[in-house]
Length: 172
Length: 146
Image 1 (cartoon, chains in turn yellow, blue):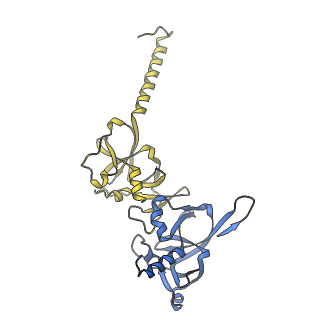
Image 2 (cartoon, rainbow over the protein chains, first blue to last red; image 1 turned 60 degrees about the vertical axis):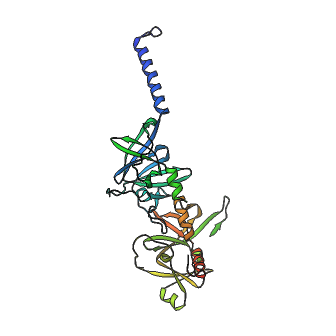
Image 3 (spheres, chains in turn orange, brown; image 1 turned 90 degrees about the vertical axis):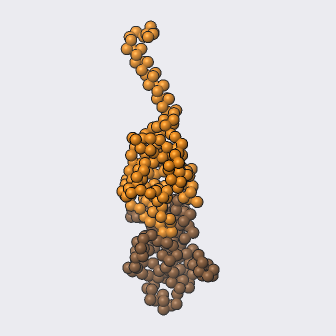
């Protein structure tokens, strides 16, 4: 250990610790992606964190006539009117989980913005890019086309959804 | 629509009649309304009654009208639009009217619903009566095919 440039060994050690911490932080930043993990029926999904602007509690939904089942209507977010979609209906998810959605994630991608009803937010975390694997064929085809990858979190498979694809499909 | 001139930019206001259809609060430009009458009076006059829920799919089961009235729309004199529970006329500044979100727009615009506003913490969907009447008249000419 070369401590000759430092009067005290502790100074050297502290500098070394800081250097290592900085380099570790950099490596995590460069090779990780932030995701918002949420549950829908029996499954866990994630959105890229950069696409989620806000997480809200369940708000009153005002129906809009003439819209499909997966668009239950509009919400009033502090005076701003946002649409809201039910992802499980849109994706045609099977399952027995009948819990009412309790949260609304406000997502924005490619200039399109909407609330998305989810049952609960399970976690917000950084995952290493290397942990994201290609989509398994076990995921139903109706969902698979909107999945950009998947990873394992707390022992469960989490599918990362491509918000741009979902929004462009709905708003056509 | 009224324009109030002043030293700054012009302030546009819209008088909006709010009412209910199948439990949903809608609003229409009061300037489009020529007259409001009871349904029996509209029938006596021989008007074609347009029911909004027959033109646009409303969610849920049909709810009977509690206080129906018929609107006679300017420039569409032979058609009367049935509404439920006309409530109030509110003055709305143009700035407080919000376009429909992109997700809704494609489904709403073609049905006459063109924007929304928040009043008393409630979202009101704005519907264009004239557009609805003209769409109905066009559908009639095409043999009822919307």
